Image (cartoon, rainbow, N blue to C red; front, side):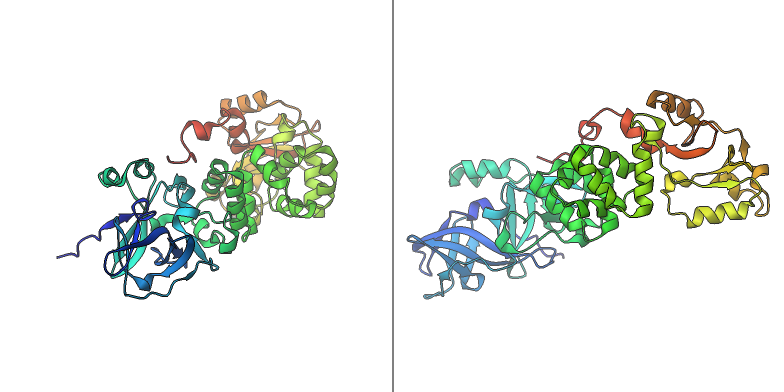
Length: 422
């Protein structure tokens, strides 16, 4: 027979309840519960903040005989009560977390801690869950006798929760990177966009431990949030971040910088990235030139298929730009295109010219967005080469480059993606 589920104690029922001595006499009031977030799935309660008279004191959990909605009972006749001083790593459940946003790592959403649930597990009081429904708010508004009749809403297991703690400087804690690293960059970006600025900064600081993930998250943010977070960073910090992004994404972001800051940040980029970004900034952002990536694979038509596949394997270009290998003639003009699937189905020694589809559909660098979308839709293209007046390839527009521009503004919010759970 399995052990019965431990009884749950609502934090709202404990806070402002009576502190009683061993004889049951009321001697004070419970103000808060203290936990230390040390990586455990269900962190233990280490003590209580209690008030006796006008003094706010610390009561270690070892001095507590029991907790209930009626209050806390002291374990003995005498208890060592010291003045409360927060220690590093400690959080006060009511003061620091109640009614604040928390991250639910399951589903990558923000929830509001309207109620925090405690339970005595193997003789130790622990934080076991969060109720984001309005039931906790209702309990705090009702008299205690009525509040006890309010049942819990759906409870989120604390094991999947990560709190924001940047607003508690004395706690000296931050969101652990290892937890956020379980999420996709797009999911983290959705969290940042749904959070307050302070909360978003805390998320960005956490993922900043992995520069590649930080860049991926920035690429997923909408332009307003990208600029919001970069405004508070130095030119060198902004350049470091832009250097890890795809050149077209970096150029789009840099184009939105204030004019007086754009050049210093551009000059701080590594030479190779600076050259690509500078070239992209010369195009109108609403044309194929402004949309394209300068990273693509273009090989002579005499190259063998094996060389093309090796180029795909070793390229640092974005994966979506590597779905097609483009082919040039002796003068460097674009004459063909071969999908990676076509290459894999060909013999390694076959020349690209005999494998590639001739005269691929392309767009000029000055083509507007509507023309690019129309071409990609009409010919079912996931990657479209961009050429200059001499039909030499200067970039490639991929389907993801145009999707966010043609989708309605705020579409993620419209479909509930990233929105906080109430």
